[in-house]
Length: 223
Image (cartoon, rainbow, N blue to C red; front, side, top):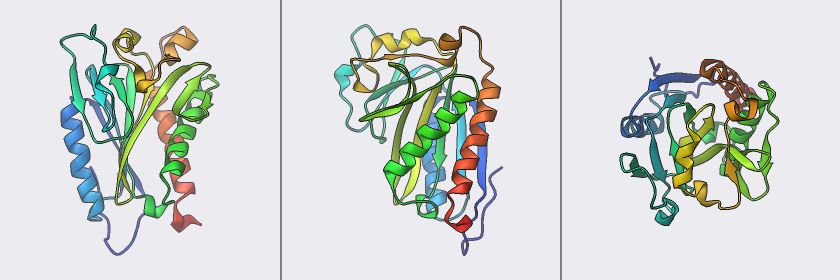
């Protein structure tokens, strides 16, 4: 349950909502409703965890040709308001949608993106996966393969959309797109790297801790 906060003060509390498996469109509409509430100071900052049915999403400047002709006919596509190109969401992937007021932290989209990347890098490190960034590219990488994608929208310094971390998805779905419009690199997952099944709840729990630590430590009220 989301707790309303006092509109005369800004709380450091971040709510965590785990939606489990939920249809993409339903969670997209839910994000927009929370964005409006956060804009009106009716709720605290919120991190949504969710898992989707197989879908392709295209950012506002995406190239539709990056969905290839061989894509499965039964998979839905959505044109959405985040930045970035085409990406895939599906079972076995942890998706996080932070609804965060950056005015309480730092009014910088680049700082926010690098912070999300660092949270994922720190999470993967706990599972003995040494990941990193690539110069000029958004996301988190294991060698030359992307393991986590980021795409956000910021409205009046409040964020929506967010990140997806590949735990054990069916990577064959990526064969029908040019992920994030990047031709030269591939896509991987935690289970592929470690050659074993990964407990999604353990990853979620670890990422939650890393997320809360990063944002609570950078909240202006704590400085």
